[in-house]
Image (cartoon, rainbow, N blue to C red):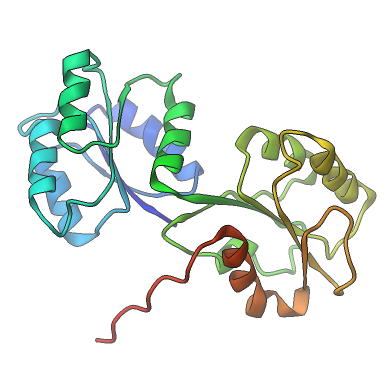
Length: 243
């Protein structure tokens, strides 16, 4: 799960953005000033920063200058999301190293979410768990470049995939039903979703229609992570140094 630092001083906008980024699979930390943000970064290095420009005290531009001056932090991708939306502000933000500059509005948020995902090279996986006795699929897939969008409502799966377009779908097929295979068929015949690869968690290794890889349920904990990362072109993060 990528760590996202949201620097926004408006309580309402901070709540709206935080909730949306959390839904999209980010671990969100918030700060309402540049000074607070720098303290937060010292404790937990974020994978991406979303930055307002108009802040009390240190401006977003000054924060960005300080961030880029620190070699340990200079490579963190920063996306500016602000009400200061004139051409000069955008040019200054980009010249200071911001990846993209967005005008602040709730209606623009879906596009902002997509552009941040693309700009950082994050992958998105949609695990569909139907069996309450099966370990939650997303619990096996932690990675700081992977967004998880779990769903457990079979009748909503097709419309969910069409709206969000994940990079990989993982279906629990251990409880087979005509509805489940109807959803798979619908996804594989829909031009919007038919290129999304699918892994099935199944009771056997027998092929499942519309599925690219099958993992037996009793091998899920051992094999799912490596298979999913291979299909997503993700590498295992380095092990944490021993104390």
